[in-house]
Image 1 (tube, rainbow, N blue to C red):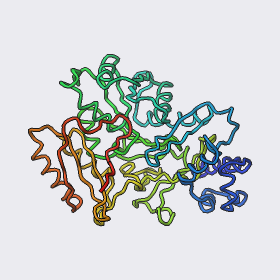
Image 2 (cartoon, one colour):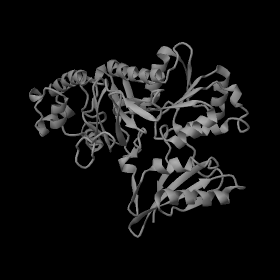
Image 3 (spheres, helix red, strand yellow):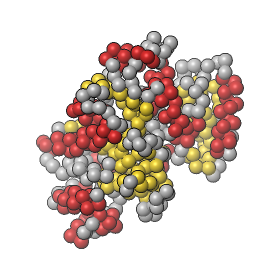
Length: 414
């Protein structure tokens, strides 16, 4: 694997040195000497990491697509855009037919790892089909081997009816939306579980698919097996979950050089330790990223020699909140809330109190059990984090519902 990675990487780096774009300039500034490299470790030692801030600055200097294109603009046929959730500034990404095909191959691996049956499985896509890369690559890859059912623009009710009418066997959506749809099955929608043939659910777009409490709740609602996946518009589909190794994500190492490093030192962590996921494209060569800091916080593990994210993506470095010396990730709060099936929706409000971060949890729940639920949830939060985190009831229907990436943390004024 390492030899194949180096072969692809060396060809890509040599090609980048012949351009006048983003990486040619970055190589020059960092003193990268491609001629002195003979293996992957040389590349890692010489090549500085790439940050999202650098990419944003490059797009401002070279609007609208930046200068990280390895071919003439006329050869690009695909447009996608990041959500901009971490920066507030979406970034456009272009692909050639060849780079696009490389990403479809990655998605086909996702489906194969979930043991889908070509020609028999029908995959239902509960996405809006906006400009995000994951929607389109997942759908197009599925259409090569399975019946792909799009549902952009439909209501949740209409989607459940469509799944039942056409016998969909696989659902593809975010963990949040899998929960939302699942809670409508039965009396709320008139669609009974027995009328649905969904047996597997592939989730992506946000942490949750590998969180045991979230998985368990989705699987109970649907009586189906959950498979997690993660990727990003900047680099493409990155990892998949295998049937025989649930709750973990295996890196597609033929398509990515992946490192897990200490974010402070930049040094690779040992197996069993936590760090930031760093990715280098090996096959999406029309708009590649070299040693890209994803901001994803993960735990390094090897599974049969393959680099694995134990427990999936655990959180994002920029989402972590320090409360009175305790590091808390949104995924940790989500894991606790999902243990209480009575919670219909929730929102975390974060604010500064005397220069210190504090959070408060707002929940929606049925009125006849809400009072005892608040006390039970506060007790669970206190036992888990050794902190007092207030829980308050929100009026029914007042909290936002989500189809794509859920935004359940809100920063408020003090």
